[in-house]
Image (cartoon, rainbow, N blue to C red; front, side, top):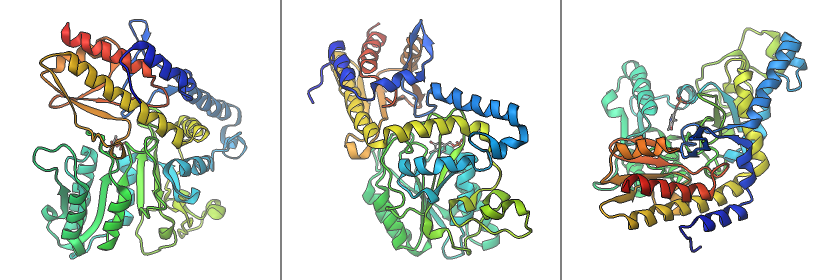
Length: 429
Ligand SMILES: *Cc1c(COP(=O)(O)O)cnc(C)c1O
């Protein structure tokens, strides 16, 4: 499409946008009496109007029914989490029995590593990406330290990072594959962010998963920036496990619950260790209070506690909205609006001397989703602060990078145009 950097053109794209109506379903913060231009849905998604309704429903049931709400609430609490399975399975490309919700993301990855990182002295290495999200790095370090002494391997050798090449911003697939081959038999686990949080790079999960399996490793994915943002086929890609937070693209509210995936081929495997709790017990027999753990033969078998229904309520509102729209429509708009934002950035850059906006996110549409990370050469933090004061909510990462995520559910094309104008004013003064 031949884009134009005009308000009329942006408005025309909004008129043609079949998802435009969903913008009304969200609550935007206001700056200077106007809706903000929200680019941080990759960090905390906006609140939907439905979220409050779902929470109020639970509050009312709690007041009216108290303990009886477990069985007699409109959406009974004892199996409230099961309502997620169908819609979530569609979002991540899984069978409903392969997904669930519980805990928070890093906690779930730790629990999944209990099952899928069982190192021996010969097979103990973990492959991850260089500069992984800090929580993942701390997780790897602490998991390795937890096992190293009793198994007898050197913790310093256990974590193998895939590096970017000199002068490049993104990791090459060929470098991931050759590293997997190089580590070979010693490789116990590959665990990478499906979409890199800093650059927005999307990894080829199918190919990497295959390569990991070829050397006998388990392969898992941290899908914090992927769930609700990209097309996933976790079952078909034969991924062993995955987890994601719900408060980024899935709009479930601050710090909210994590979704997880465990491939069905592992559901009956009793050799996998796991940390158990009563909510993972055979569902029909859960309330018999039996002494011995008999795990449910599905992803449910990894559940531990009864679930925080109040916090799941806004997440359920969100998965219902995603299910109603479907990922293909979201992805179609995502690609168009992200390309339009990229165009606007190039236009503004060309109009201003002495600056260079270097988009470090891959330009190949197969390797990116809705985030553009922009290196603002020649600009400082003052520009970021100017944007925030003028209603453009973005985030700043050292040394000089802003991350912009136009979220297809609630961002408009006119937002992109308007952002360009504010950006230009912020630089030219
Ligand atoms: C946001 C994010 C997290 C956050 O983890 P929590 O346990 O939810 O605090 C973890 N990993 C990645 C890659 C992220 O982007």
